[in-house]
Amino acid sequence: QVQLVESGGGLVQAGGSLRLSCAASGSIFSITAMGWYRQAPGKQRELVAHITNGGSTNYADSVKGRFTISRLNAKNTVYLQMNSLKPEDTAVYYCNAVTVVGGLYPEVWGQGTLVTVSS
Image (cartoon, rainbow, N blue to C red; front, top):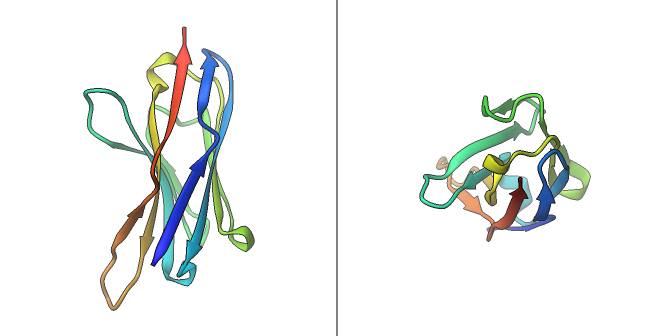
């Protein structure tokens, strides 16, 4: 099994920056891709950014040009650098890993870290 632990959330003013980190442990060899999702109050969880083992990335349109996802495989860690933050980026951010187990692709979630952007 894989475990994910996020860190780096907090309160920041609009226009500021934060970097989120997600450390994976356990059966990390089973991970095929990792990503970040977020859920704002009263809204559904949505994809923010995603990176595969091969380094391919994709981003939600709302964060393109402002957020960057990166991954240090040697450290089993994925990062989300968030610049030019806006109040609408306020949400709980969740780390996600897609794993391969016996032909199935179970997903693993972290506990979430709160990002609050003040106007």
